[in-house]
Length: 423
Ligand code: 5AD
Ligand code: SF4
Image (tube, rainbow, N blue to C red):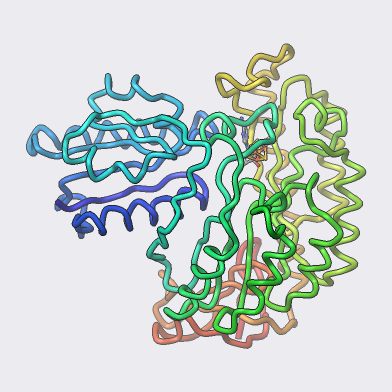
């Protein structure tokens, strides 16, 4: 049987799709070269915002219509939406639904065993499974699963269960294996990597271990949590030469009162002090963030506080979202929900402000020397290649396909609010 997986959402889902691929390959399934060729189509899904779920349901109903001409085709849903919506998905004509802790059972489910498997397994870490990494340049390596933080807006703890960390030796072996296949970069994944602890070492210790693997040149990680970013971790980041000068540190709001209602566990002042420490210890570190507009009860003044912090910090990039009430989370039940128009208006103001800041952060790179890890040939111009700088900026320069996977020294000639044009 030939399978196709379509992946939505975060990098964790990308890594889970690689895990699923490995499980299916071991069971004798083959990857389909196209959707037309597939005997089974799976959607690996995201529940973080309503919009993400609506998009997937649209795509699923399109693919289900293929069954008119190909009745033996199976269409399944896996991942966070499978976990959240469970049985109700079967009523839409979907053949099987498998949640985040049950992927090892997929071969049996596809072959016709029970259609639904969404039981939580709070210890599930898929031991002994080293996934085949699909990227030609970077291995996305899961170091922990689940989340214990229960930020009041977030569905993740409900769909991914409690936090647990993979043993460091497994991560070490997976990294070494990725390096031996020619990948020079790894990205460590977890909902809150800063709270990694496998009973032996913490995240700072893990970075130090991985930094010693010779074949690896760059180490990245997502996502960090401001409440768990310790001084020792900052020291480890600055001391490990392979750890790139970039941190994704979601701020969510610039108002301490809103942060408290979000149950984030830090104040705006604390967040600001972390930025100061990071910039002092790691000169030229790029800082990116996530921010939510229109959280319940957010006043105009509190929203303006967020804009003020954005101006002050000057993030290299900010992923801005409008609050989306998720059923079952605390915030969905809060009084004082903000009207949709106001949420949208605040979101647009935030995006516009950040666009200007991003442009100026990128332009500040003009004239600087950067190291670019070549990832792809440019789609617009085949004599150009694209890649990333250590500080996570997309860079383009002239080159050919054979340079994919190599590190190039370059000089920044020009910049847009998203790309460095290099020579
Ligand atoms: N509404 C809007 N944004 C959300 N995020 C998570 N849950 C919600 C929600 N209910 C955002 C947060 C998080 C990012 C991955 O998605 O900013 O950091
Ligand atoms: Fe959601 Fe907060 Fe956990 Fe991130 S840390 S996944 S925002 S609950």
